[in-house]
Length: 352
Image (cartoon, rainbow, N blue to C red; front, side):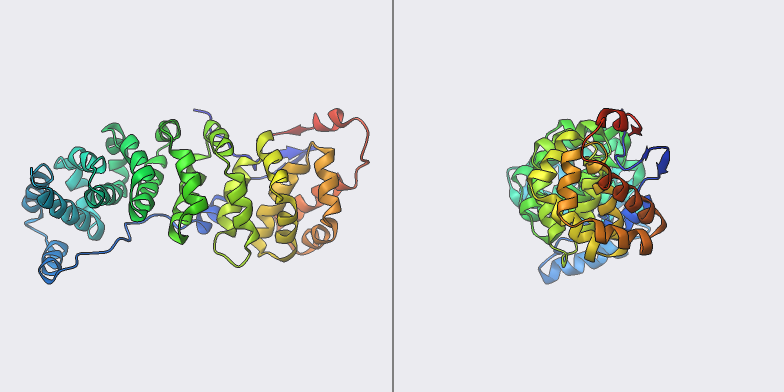
């Protein structure tokens, strides 16, 4: 599997290290467990407390609940799925025990249910089980990916958000990134990024950041029209999505089609504004993207210069982080080069 990172390259013999993995992880809120509503009735709340406190008898309780997942009664299935979800959410040590007790395959069947509530409970339970690293491979190999993608297409808003989180967790195992991409998840995640509520946008961006470390998923994302919502999210400097959108874009901009789409969607003035008024981290991501846009295209350099990029770049080269300073200096060099000449010769000095 080809795994790429578009931000790691050298120009004219100068090495530019990748954006820090720690910085990126800080920008994304990982899906640690479901954030769905709990039980509604008083009797269910008492049951919830009993489950959360279960200890020595939890193995027997888990076996009973797994049996309930395969009941002929939809209501019994819902109750069992809710309680398994709760056990997996509140007690991390139960996640592997639930999977070993045989819950995964019947839960996957619920993910494909035509009943929206039952589907939601199944997706959410699978999400909570996927928080255990030892479960990821088994969940994927048991056939969960395609049902989760269907849930991402047809489910309630909560179902879609939790399906995106579950796919994120599965994608953290490198061997699952390509199967998830080939299952049709990318366009649906792009749609969630564009049209979802605040949590949906965050979950979609996090899943896309994980999946787009693979080149063929980058291509799928660009073809699905991801650049437009990314630029729109970056343009809203007051939102919590600027860093997330910029990190996803930093993975994609190594593609020629992504650069062209970025320019077409008005991304250059957005990047220049971020370099001028964004946070230190946002400025560093933006200048990383801008460097890749400018490195081998005179037309794009001209557009960047005409947007007034040089003054904020000069300021960044003086007062930015160490990495941002170096990248800003190189972009300034590019923008000050003659607009004509042997571009091919200069481009040959760039290795991606």
